[in-house]
Image (cartoon, rainbow, N blue to C red; front, side, top):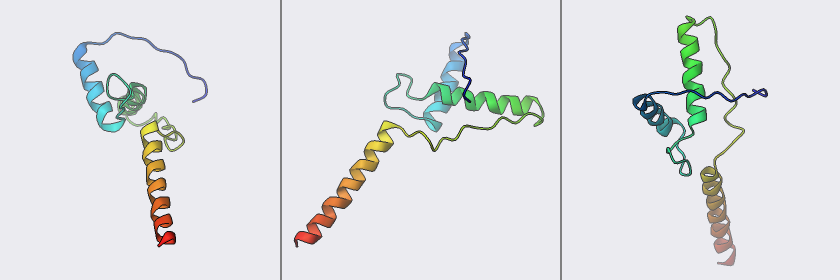
Length: 94
């Protein structure tokens, strides 16, 4: 998706609450005030809706989610690596 465009729309509060609930399960975020990545959540919902409403004749490819990682995942990965290094150093010193 190299040609991204902005789309603004109004929706009822209960719909936004439902979107956030799905997003908090699928794309949780400690930094977003909604508790999730709304863009990723809405893209999943729209893709699924288009596929369902077209009877499966239109299937949009999901972006490769393995390319980007959250800061939390990176921090946890770094902490795990440091723990492994400290463990190895402890064995070497012993």
